[in-house]
Length: 545
Image (cartoon, rainbow, N blue to C red; front, side, top):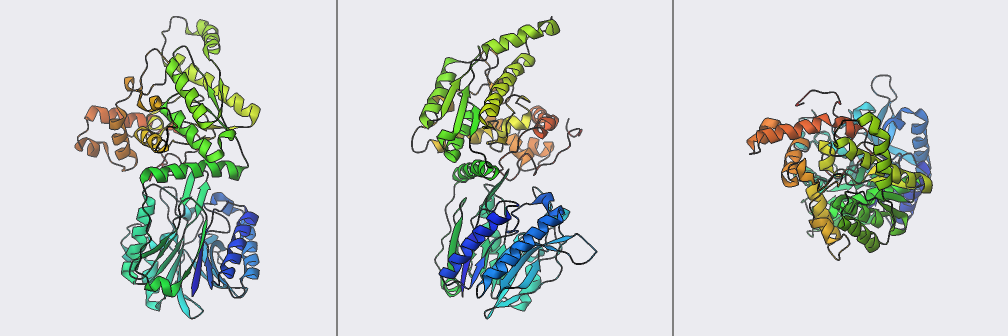
C-alpha cells in the first residue's frame, strides 16, 4: 500500500482555497500511484475556526467541500479532518472528526475523543467528545483513525483524561495508525511531538502516520514536521518545518526500514523561521503587502525589521527614524546602517518640535510638576502617532517591536511603542532577542554590531538605561520564565536562589500590567506560554499585587 501525506498551509474559512490545495495533492497522489492520501485535522475549515463554528452556514460549507472530495476520490482513499454535525439533541452541536472517503462515499467517520481545553485550546467550547471506537478496513488493511490529542494520553496516564482511545482500538488489531493533527508550534513542541508518537509506537507496536498543519493563523504558528514512524520506533521521515510538503510512502518499505531521518533542529532556527512565516502569513492571508515600523537603533526594532524584510521583501518594509533631543548620534547611525544593509526605505523625522509643542501646550496643566514618566511617554506617543500616520497614508501595517520581557513588566507605553497590528517578538525574551540577532548575523553582519553590544535604552531622558528601572535582563528573564512558562509560585522561585524582594517586585509588575497586555496587538507565539490567548489572566485580580 502507498500512503501519501499532504502537509498543507490552510486558511481558516477559505473553503475554495483549501479545496484547491487538497485537489492538487489528490492529483499528485494519484499520479504517484498512491492508494491513500492524508490531510490534517479540520482541513476543510482550517484550524482553529473558533466561533465560526457557531454559524451553521460555515459548517454546511465544510460539508459541501466533503461532497466535492467524494467526487475526486474514486479508487483513491482520502483521509481528512472536518467538523461533523451531532445528530442527537444531547451534547454539543458538533464533533471534531476524521473521515475516510473512498469510491465517492464517506466510508468511515471517527470522532475525536480527547478535547483539549488548556493553553491555546478551547475545543470543548464547540465539540462533543467521541465515545465510540473502531477501525476501518481499506484495501486489505485495518486503519486506526485518530485526531491529534487522541494519541497524547498514552496508557491513560495523562491526568486530564480518563480514557486512552488507542487502548480501546488496539484490540481490533489495526495495521497502522493515522493521526490527523493541528499541533501549534512552540520551540519545544516538535521534540515533544516526536516523543509522544514514539511512546505510542512503543506501547502498540504498529506504524504511525502523523499529519500536521503548517502555516500561521494570526498568533498561532503551525510548523508541519509531519511524521512517519514504524513499528520499531524508527523515524522513517520527519517532513520539513514551516513549509508545505507532499510525500508518498510505501507501507512495506516503512515497516522494513531501520534508517532514521529525524532532523536536527536548533531553538533559534525554529524561532527565526517561525516568526518569518508568521509575518508572511499574517500579511498574505489578510491580503496585505507592506509594513512600517519605528527604527530606533536598538536591538528590538533591528531584529523586528530584519525579520519583516525577510518575510515580506525589503521593498515592502518602510521604517521611520524618529530622534529626540535625548537620542544619541550612534542610535540614528545604527538605525540608518541597518536600513541600508537591508535595503528598506527609511525616513528621518525628528520629534523635537512636536515634543516642544506638546510641552508648551501642557504647561498650564503641569505647572509646578517635575519632569517624570509623563514627559517620557509623550515622546513615545508622538512616535506612535507618526508611524500610524505613515500606516494610514500608505496602507502599511504597523509592526510592534516590543519584546516579551518588556511586555511582562509593563515597560512600554500604551498608544506609543505598544501600538501595532502585529507583535513580532512579543513572545521572545530580551536575552533571546540578542540570540536571535546573532543568528540573523550568522553569515554576515545584517544588524550593526553596535546595536547588539550597547546597553539597551529607551532614550526618553538623559543617559537613560533599561537597567535604571529593571534588573539585568539575564536575571529578569530567568524569573519571568519561571513564573510565566513554568507557572511557579513566588516561594518556589525564591527557593531557587533569587532575592525575595526582587521576586516580589517583578511578579507584582507582571500582574499589575495585565491591562496593558490586554490592549496590545496579537503576539506571534513561539514559546510554550505566550501572552494572549494561551495565558488568560484577570485584569483586576489581586494575586501578588
